[in-house]
Length: 553
Image 1 (cartoon, helix red, strand yellow):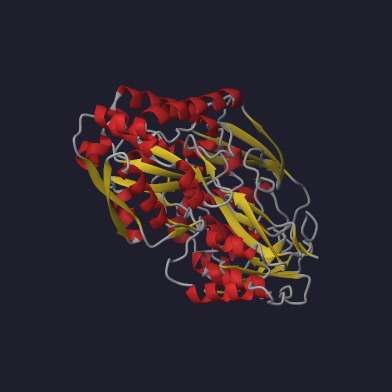
Image 2 (cartoon, one colour; image 1 turned 135 degrees about the vertical axis):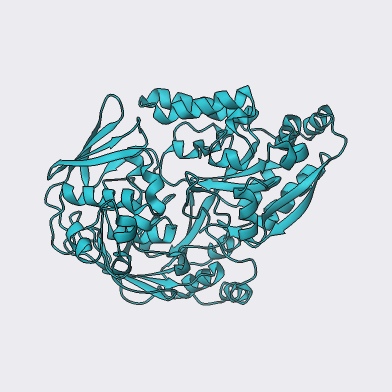
């Protein structure tokens, strides 16, 4: 899903890609066919198939790296695991603010914030027929800790998991961990049938990193309590999920979900119009308007908890003039934000800070910097620099949330030129651009961060000395202001009082806007399409589409 792969879970593991991608080159023939199909006089297509209990979904199965929850951070894998495994808690629809019970019916956090006790829902069975108990939760979470795979960053700070009785689980952390409950909604933390997985090569012991061999089994079989089970999977071709008739939450309306490998967004759009697909999970912004003309298609956009932003390296040796605070401020005022939002497409929202507006503690877009070319020119003059120029490196071969990054880069270059800031466009393959970014060698770039889990503290990575701060050449030792902001981020991470925590997040946003080497641009919207007979389909910023509530009319 990512053009930029901007994050690595807490800087140590490749985190899930943050943007849906498609190459700039493909799909031209399909685009022409789409326009022809929607031309005046063209007849309407029929809904996909005649079976009202089967959902045909188009997606990029190349993004499925594994179907082992303990190793999954890619969004397509999480979309599948969302309906094949259950987590202790969840979020409803597009919501990112209110965790709700799932396998856990209740939870209680200790006064010091270091211990959270969960009460499990009784009477739940895995698809194998084995009963779910706290031993399965402990085993699943111990396996996360000991596999040391991509999902380990989710449990940073977790000390131990205890199962004092069959329906009680206690998670203890080394320090207060107020984000723990939202984190537990991540599909990578789905609960496994410990008996079945252990019989199939699974290991949750201290040597799990080398002793666990369950991944091949989990790539071909389900071992969860979810509303669907994995029936078959042929990589880069098709994946089939069938309904779990004994699901504790009630059987799904659909009998089967078939996810077909259709990586090109234009082809997905074309197949939805033709009736060959029920759902297109990835369409481009330029397909939204044509699809809205199709009588048998519904186009939706859902907000994504993702921050697009400009990065300016704060280290003089790398950033050059862009390490100058006056130039950083000049960039903020030189950008044409309304023009940038037009590129971002329908549903995109201007951001005043780095925390998505969907989350508590985010800055009100009304206080965002506005375009003021005269002020930008004045700030350039105040910097004392006679020649402000640099290299703008970006991933030129990517389209993200339907937004061509090359087009966005050209727009930024043009805006800054009007203020006397000259940027040489340095379009690079994604791997090369990422190397510069992750290595802290990107002088000027446009990047982003997507929510790994539904909590605003995931966006404290922009603080000095944290993941994005380091990539921007901005350590906590950079200045007294940076040191103070880094301390605020640490305190916010540990604050258990929700009202105080929100106030601290808002203070973080205000201060970062004043002293940080970033310019927040926008929060994108996810465009997707489905047949007009599809009801109950929702999109979530962490796990994408949720198929449990879908029905065909």
